[in-house]
Image (cartoon, rainbow, N blue to C red):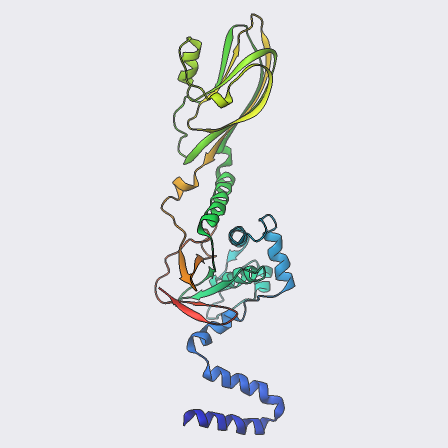
Length: 343
């Protein structure tokens, strides 16, 4: 009865307003009939732009260093770009202000809906399927069909770079000196072999450039105690892959050292040697130790892993980081407007 009444009423209205008002009335009719979930989501998903040459160009500039068709690299790169270049901006008081991707780019920020709309639009424009997720108080994204292992690799690289940017001066130690090494004498530079200090470090690399007027022997040892044993003629530990004898010049890197050791130079000649040394000790930060309790959060949709991406998580967040949003959550496909509840 009611449905027929609506149809008749619509027909009468069409006669009244004339043919030019047909689209407006159809829109009103569709809105009346709309699923309440889609009705709520429409203002947001209608802002997601999936086919725009300017957005595609913008996204491509962000992912240009990623391997071709590497969805995980592209997802991580676009996430990093947003959290590092856009601010969280609340809506004006009492107003639900929904920005287009272009407006968010122009303003340089937005709230959770705006940043999610931008993120989804950029991914969709490079062929990566997304969902918009709405809860009662929050909005974020899902990225469809993600290889968790491959993604984790890029997340680790981003965190190592971020750690270097934050603590770089404490992760690198450089040394440069010219000196005379007397005949039948030895020289040592480095640490005492203890752990790496207050940082979560996987290993240390030593990069070296050494020149000498006389042939020298070169060793990399795990501790200063090994240097003392070497001087005393006792058996000492060293890294065989980083050992060189009778060298006049040497330029290389000794990698994956498990302790803060150092370098021995031995002048077995009876005459002095003029030596130039340039060293860099680099402590490689450990993503896995720092974030060993963190995981990639995902949902199964259409038989594929779809990872959570919350662009309000900040630079210490990552694709797959779940901020613990509780309550009812609905994932909506911005193109088909099909939706599913996340549990």
